[in-house]
Image 1 (tube, rainbow, N blue to C red):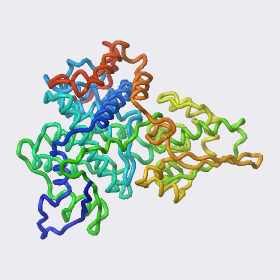
Image 2: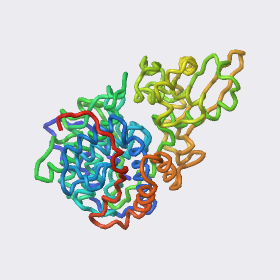
Image 3: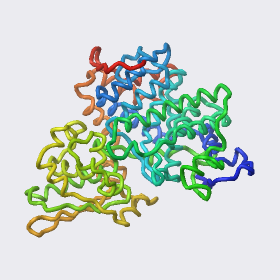
Length: 499
């Protein structure tokens, strides 16, 4: 990996393209390096993972709306829409929109956390949609996805968005564009322009994850994917984009991030170096914000030591800056303590999550968020006894590069009414690669079977699992086989819109 310093230059300084971050990203995308076997295997895992969470969410209202919008853009020879029959194809940008929303809705697919946050599995829907439309092979798709993950994770490591209240899709969209560029074997110049357009149009604020969180949280990465497909299409026709998008005097860095004095370091693979970043990401066992994964596991463990939850006086969670200020009491969001809040808000309330995990000892992607479940009097009582505090040590470990130091958990102190105190801590979720029970292929398949049980047929389950595990062997034009369809008549149709 090579370090690239990224800063702002005045307009009078004509920064060479080769010295711009967007060009360097494009050069990595255009490098036709082989994909290692373990990376290929992990890509298969993440395609299974995406399909599992998408099917589990297939008839939830945001997914229904996105699918109906996509079906208003039917195209012969386009891309499949998950849940629908494979012969119902849409224009790729709209398939990316529908499928990306389905993948993101339950907040249960993969994650990577560093200077910023990300769900790198969001790269897969637009890259797959273009691959299907352009009749590419399984190997082509693998190369494209490897690039999407690489660029996304490298940007997340180097440039913090959230401290400036910029939503994290600003790193996702250029990664998606770069992955599509790799998939289509586009030249560096074309990918460079696509990356710049993708960056320019994808900067949005974090209000989408603040206060009363709406369904836009699921749509945001799908919107990025749609923009990425459109960016690549446009520059393939010979059009350019705002430049230099990162380093310019009026660029996103100059005005939306650290400003004119910014100095970021972004590490990217050297020429000929394999794109391995996907191996540093991790999926979710539980349907909730990633920072809650270890804490749910910790709550399950601690409840075994508490004979009477009503005897709890108060609970304090000591954790990282991010967990405290984004999903904890440090966010100062009253909605995070409100039983009438949306599912999207509740899965960003570690106080609610801890209360339910302590009471139930299990976590379910639907039942744990049901309005009746959230409104239970004993749950509300326990929920309001929980507070979070930032601990500098947990913040340090959250940003650690050493896998032995990295941590996304915290320490729980449970104060009982009799004056006793129970204390326990957990650094990593059980399913994390360095956790107690790291997820392997069998776990991804098990997750798929659990989340899709009763939604798709047993025959469709086996067909998809057999096919996806042969991904490197799929020939050009066979990628529609990766679609997962519900039995006829099982897809819900939503309200009518313009399309």
